[in-house]
Picture 1 (cartoon, one colour):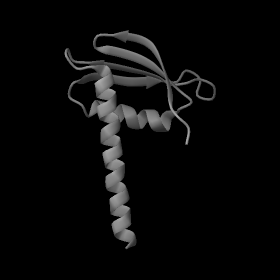
Picture 2: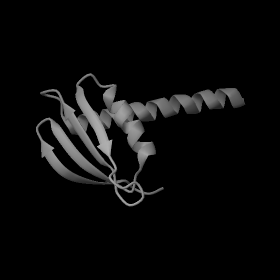
Picture 3: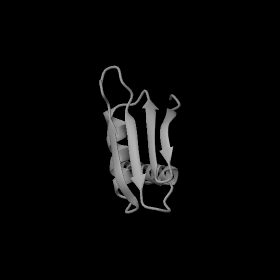
Length: 95
């Protein structure tokens, strides 16, 4: 499994724009959806200018007092929890 590489493009108090090297729509849609589950995330979107050759750019804006980095970490934690639940459900079916 490869490590994910991030490049911070712009950073302000409640806004963050990062390039996610080597990822595509699959991961970015999942991350965006999880970010939008957070009521303190006002905007979460991404863009891939040229799908076959460009890296996605993630943009997130949070409410005052909510750190965008923390919002991303919490979104990833929610994704991990959901996949753990899916794994448990599959294991329960196979037994």
